[in-house]
Image (cartoon, rainbow, N blue to C red; front, side):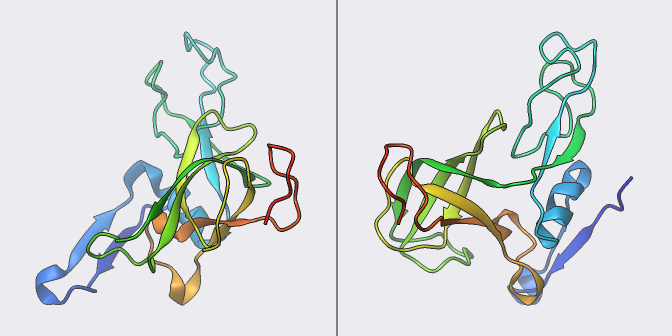
Length: 166
């Protein structure tokens, strides 16, 4: 079992103080703080789709979308994959703690059924298929949000299109 977290965000002054709870997704955010990527899987043998052997979901789901039973938490041992698609962001929204321009990336991680949306540390030109690995903002750099997960290019690794990664 895990202890649920309640966060206090005083960063916008007294008017902007914000309290937030992660609820059933607490293990995901606790994992980010420890440099671990946590996902969920349906293990309900009566599930009409997973039949007890569901695929990993990331972002995680507290409950299975097919049988509506609680999912099981698992650590992704090697959180790396490839850029499935990307967008170059020239202007970020208010309160976004990412220096622009940056790449918003969708990453396909082998063994995970879903596509992970995140951002890329690297600022040089990228291509679909470039290999990436997860990086975690921890300690004083942590925002305690989904922005604490980002990716970086895996230098020298082959891309999915047969070229070399940056």
